[in-house]
Image 1 (cartoon, rainbow, N blue to C red):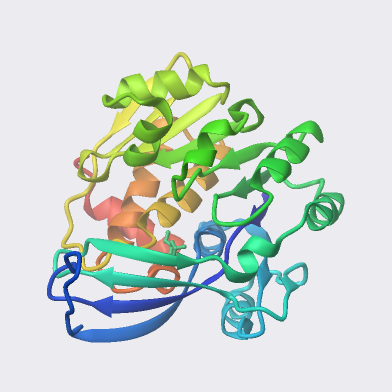
Image 2 (image 1 turned 180 degrees about the horizontal axis):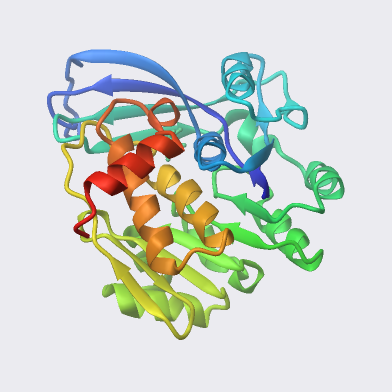
Amino acid sequence: MKILVFGSFNIDKVYSMPHLPERGETLYCEGFEIHVGGKGLNQALAFSKAGEQVFVGGKVGKDGDYLTGYLKANGIDISDIDSSGEHTGHTIIETDPDGQNQMILFGGANREITEDYCDYLLSKHGDADLVLMQYETSCVEYMLAKAHSLGIKTALNPSPYVKAINDIDFSSADILILNEYEAQSITGKKDARECAEALYALGSREIILTLGADGSVYYDGERYVTCPAFKVNAVDTTGAGDTFTGYCLSHLLGGAQPYDALITGSAASAIEVTKPGAAETIPSKDEVERFLLANKTM
Ligand code: RIB
């Protein structure tokens, strides 16, 4: 399948902390690494590793070769990526010994995307089987509405959550894929099923919710399917949702039953969190298949 991922490209600066700092606290970190990242880049990689043909749209700055070079080396077509004289987006990520994190996001070139650029991408990739987007770039609402009006299947990962997301016309998103916090923030509900039903009522046709240690959920107005999470020793959860997104959507679009799509996404993200980093630790299709075979009891 042909997938167009419209999204963000970030340089991730990752600091290993003894604990996540309190307000006003100064802390030495115990390690520092630089990784490729950004929800767009990570999700493009996950889709590609799942076996799909991936094209990416987005914008990097003068220091963006590190990201575009990585995508190219991993077989992803980068010919449509726009560039700017400004800084590439970057993220400061603090991780604690339990693998939990907090982030500071600098949008940079990701926030310079224009409607003209979206038009260009859609005119070139109108034959895509899916356009996937997140909420780290400018023009998401425009891209979503335009792709939908052209009859292209759309998936929206409304992440990270900001209040403006509540104003999106979700009926333009065929698939909504999001975590529990994002779902609760959009709907004002607490319970996963209530969140899924409320999101469905906003107009999307398929809802996929990730619930951390409580697994994941699929809802399409008729079927409410739940899937447990795998228990693994998490070192860094950065990119777990992106890995789940690429693998789960790849299987769903390929005709898999919702449970099989959820469990495949879940296996891929379970492997990804056992190593530090985001995109670089997204597993191959073979690794995911071996993991599923070894953990067949679910
Ligand atoms: O979802 C993980 C990603 O979020 C990181 O790679 C970081 O860049 C932020 O965009």
